[in-house]
Length: 135
Image: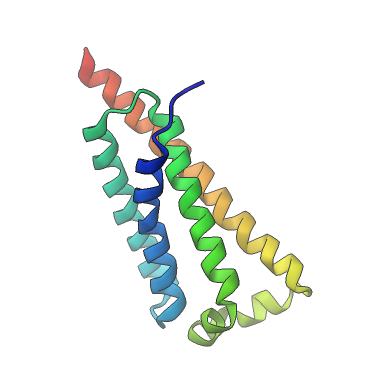
């Protein structure tokens, strides 16, 4: 089983926590700015992984990105009222979900889903680049 540096993953996942706090507690429009913010975060993770050269870059990237997804889900669910007050354009979409439990599951599933998919993509890119620079 590949070795994951959990301290490294946890530390870099804090960028996801910063993003979650920023977009929960401010009225910045998530559509353009959250995408730009996450792009910057993934570029920072790419640079960190390329410098660190982990033995299992895909697993390391998945761990970092998944932890970041956990942060996002926790912040958005814990401070949902604040998030909706700052982003009323999403209130109708979340109201359609019905129960609070479904809303929690949708937010958590979306955050973790994005974390797994984007973390996997990043990990494969890092692995490919590490192999191509090693030869």
